[in-house]
Image (tube, rainbow, N blue to C red; front, side, top):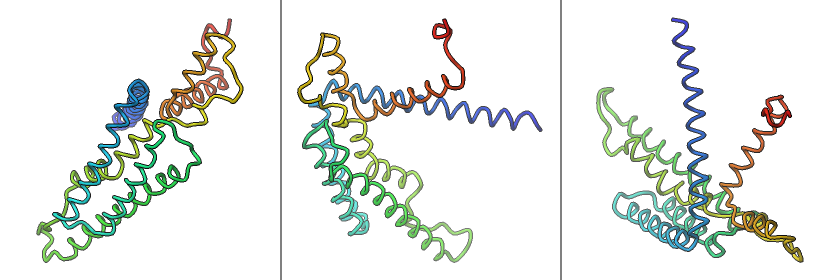
Length: 220
């Protein structure tokens, strides 16, 4: 077969493009939703952080998750909670924001290493190839833990927070007209996820213009 593998590759590329567009559209919609309901979003995120901290503590006490990794996860969510003091605005050079970025990656690496070692030890203790190791979390359980306890709050903060470089007006600047005031208001309420999507679309538009793929109205 020669054509069918090519069709499979083409379908994979098209599916990846649609998936990327769906994620970008979802981020854009969530960012606009948070902009319209900042008070509700702050209350929801705060309760979500406390709930995940309680869930991690429960996993440590009942399922005997490692104490120090659990302590690191609770401390990380405590740092995430510090970003809520000026919600939805955040300074990209804020030590709490930078520490949050580092802790996300550190938690992901350490928990991935923990589950990998746990599975490796379980398979090494098998007496036969056909045996099924006990007390090994399934892929669904591991993925759910990463999604809820490691990545959910940082992802929600990324969607909700707005970069202060975009939200604070220049000192001494006054809107020249009503349109200028509306433009400044739109910049003030723009979130990081929304700004990222806009920048990506702008970069794609510039690349297409450099490649000569201009619209018909631009050529006139």
